[in-house]
Length: 110
Image (cartoon, rainbow, N blue to C red; front, side, top):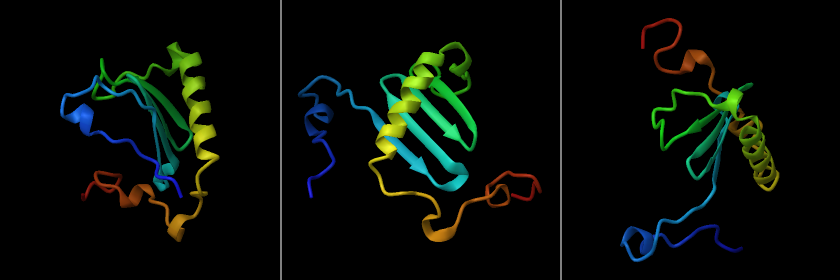
């Protein structure tokens, strides 16, 4: 099976310019999905969708989704295409985190 990776040593050692690579990831808890493409990051948490410019807003406070629907759609579609090539994530280990399992949630005792 071919490796899915890139040798980062030249970039880390300063021997090549910055690499541009679109990154995808997902997390079963809260049905999270994310794409990082350049300075833009698409994030889905449950049914909520966000678009951030992480170079200008590293704390991800300003949701650009309402103002940039084309970029949101582009990254959402890219995630869907990538996700279709991955193993299904539904029911992994039969456990999905609920709000009661996350720190600083409703009962306030964490």
